[in-house]
Amino acid sequence: MREHLVLAIAALAAAVTMVVVPPDGGYLTYIDVETLGCLFCVLAVANAFRYLGAFDRLAHAVIERLTTPRSVAMALVLTTGALSMVATNDLALIVMLPLSAITLVKAGWSHLVAIVFVMEGLAANLCGMVLPFGNPQNLYLYSYYALGLLEFLQVMTPLFVVSTVLVVGCTWLLTRGAHDAPATMEAASRMPLGRRRMLAYALLLVFAALAVMRVVPVWVSVLVTAAVLAYADRRALKAVDYPLLLTFVCFFVFAGNMARMPFLSEWLHGLVSVHGLLVSAGLSQVISNVPAAVLLSHFTADWPALLAGVNIGGAGTLVGSLASLITLQHFTSVRRVFPSLRDDQRLSTGYFLKLFTILNVTFLGTLLLVARLCGL
Image (cartoon, rainbow, N blue to C red; front, side, top):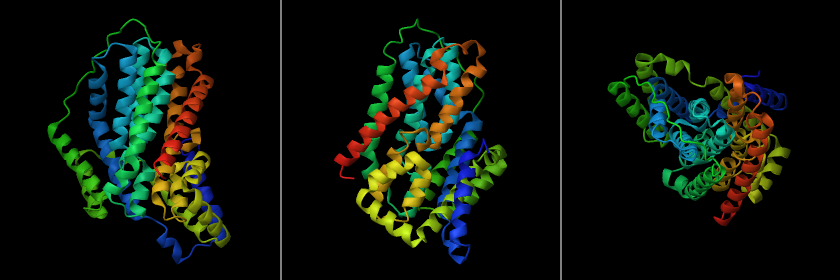
């Protein structure tokens, strides 16, 4: 339950709605198989790169020549944002958070861990919004509304640019007092990456992207990805976040049943039609942005407002995005991994939550204002 809390909540929500709408043939129309297939491919290929050491190599290449606290913090945050565009926000954090903690603590800059973790969470949630496969809710909405890449980019690019400027600006300001003596970063021990595997995985990533953009049938991409990785690295297939895929199935059942409740359907349809941006961003704060996207998609044709709202809604509360919960989980483990830092108040959960709340609420309000100015 602790490890898969979101899945447990999604399953419970689906089960409750099944009491009101008993299972029937209509349930078969709930499941968006294309979204699940695309998500599987993206997660599997990202895992393959991770096990190959490509992400670690990239991160070390970015930071190992930097020696000042500010430059290292900036590199860690921006690398997280860049990875979230191609490896989903959750996986980007799983790769970067442990690396960030070790890098900062070994360099003697443990006082920056909370700042970097919060900014990495924001970068993963908000920088990944620019591409359909950067965030799970984007992948779903891109498939559900049969969007084209250009129309998707037209809506998300202004928000992405503002988000990136905010991430860079805040990271720069929050590390302005970090004038500690420069430290020499330890060079990463390098194992050969394997050019053939790198090329194969790169082609799989391109194949997955083509499937997302509906150039290649999703089922073909799934079969090719599964076949190649079953031969090249079965660990990548085993490490796919199958609980996340099952969580999507539960959300599909929950949202499909909710749409068949006339009283609720009429109320939500009217509310989202008038206040799509605010409702989607607000609901994300309560039930997280992925289920908010799945639920509200059944009640509105105004996909730009919904798409912007659930992405912006990744900022705000801890519940707004699963990525935020992952960030908190990794932060609370830092003092366990480094016992000598247990008395450092800047590594306390209270300090992290205070910093997280101030920055996330600021980002949420600013981006909502920008979205309004963009006519969403």
